[in-house]
Image (cartoon, rainbow, N blue to C red; front, top):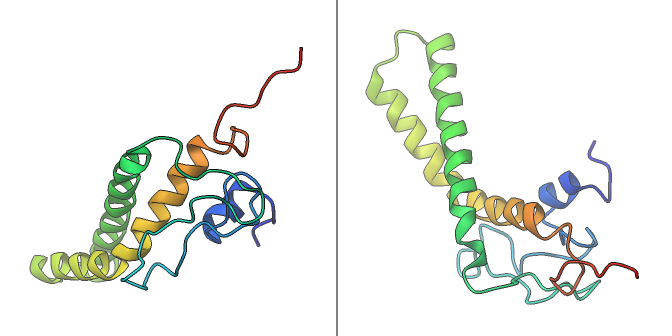
Length: 132
């Protein structure tokens, strides 16, 4: 079980990277009309989710890594469990899983990116001020 208040909890449950309680997305990842739409600020702590234009472009790299990890896992599973499977079945299965999982992977990559770069900042999106 993932402990509440941790970064992993924030990622798994799509919660605010600052307070880890408020909702991050406006809708479920498979609501394709609103897929990827974020709240401008956290409903609980008022933290900004976008600190600069294009901030989430880097999430593409996270999404790519997740996709490659899934593809390699499926490929190895086929090699172990069904070594005589034709390559077109393996590629087709990988393609179908990636296609069906893509809305979730898109949302997951954005929340991982936000937790990597926003968690150490104050709720306003700026680094915390040091006490003098």
